[in-house]
Image 1 (spheres, rainbow, N blue to C red):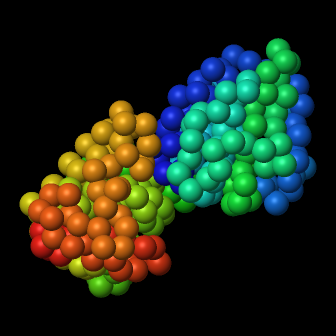
Image 2 (image 1 turned 30 degrees about the vertical axis):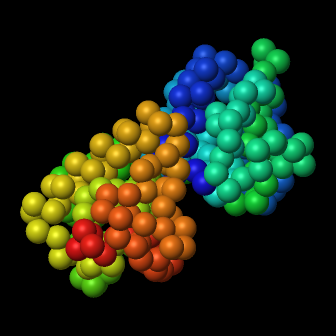
Image 3 (image 1 turned 90 degrees about the vertical axis):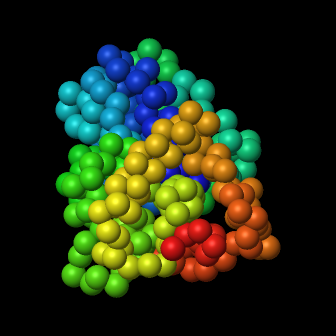
Length: 258
């Protein structure tokens, strides 16, 4: 499923759009439109200026508007027939024409497409970037400290990490990998971390994100193969605990994650 890593790989592919002009917009599935479908006409004749990312949100700037793409659980970006991701975990390997939800035809004959089997992906015009927290790939210690605090001091650590309004980009797989590497329990209160633990967590968020990018996906962590019932911790061989934290299935090691 697309997390920060997959969206960053999509952004890198989208850089090939800079300087190219949109000929027409094709709304194949209105369900995919997060803003009024009529607003997408602003893209016709527009020229792409930049490809950015904020957390899990891909932002394609043009000289008239910004196109936002959120890939849900199974969405994939395809540009000029080339998918940003050859394979997406928990999604079919081969793209089917019926999964095309949104497309831009380019004046040079190319195309920008959003394919999504589960119809959870969304496109928008000028999305509210301010609704997202700091990007987790570059989060500072001060930003992370602020993200973990809140009115309720009993909110679980993993739940806070998954809250995109506080920290943008961390999804379920990245959260489990980061907390496993940082030796922190996903169930402990987010506000309970001391300064040392906070620094350790911040380092692991940034370094783990970088490592997963180099490996090619959020599913490429060392914990991934053990995220099954009966799985053993790759670090100490202790049986992993499977629990529900922040509404998401969570695997963690009670022997070293405290």
